[in-house]
Image 1 (spheres, rainbow, N blue to C red):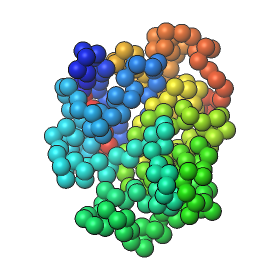
Image 2: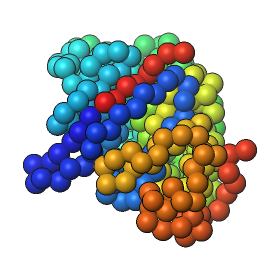
Image 3: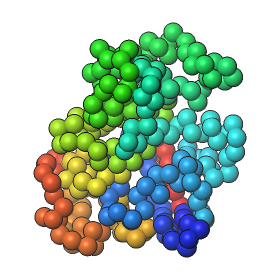
Length: 259
């Protein structure tokens, strides 16, 4: 697939890859390499200029209205800045993951069923925040807010999680907690993940596969142990030692297909 903006900037150039269920794919590259554009194109938050994005074999770019909304249920989004509703409770924010399944006034007024509420509370227990269920989301720390964002996305019962710089705003301890939780929850449910990361060491630690972008093109697609120093320098224009913040290296069906 390709993406060219109205100002002539070519954000994505001939991107093509297939993601299978259960894979944990980190997308790395410098700022401006196309990482965020890629995620938003997959979920059709932005239109692509050419090619196709298929989710479970269905062409996302051809869907409209209800069909698009139903397809988006399969792709949960986790944002750098959390995108919570801070005036609502933590529990209500997690329940928002079910809005795509609700019709009419039930969705408008947030009239969730008891089973949904029970599941949301179980998810809060899983992320270690059950004691904050009835607190306002604004009361939480940054790391706690991102954990709620993960629970909300998982509440959708997605086939794919799209995570746009989920730890960029967090301190190292909170970042580790969030990445551990994201990795564990996705693996437990066999959900495929695409995670945009600036932190090379984090990508090496958690990924089953890494995609390296440079100027809108894929220049690397492989396992973490296959990412050589020479390739790192090609992706970032600088050496590995200038990119490592700390941490250790990490030692079926198609879910998403982009071309």
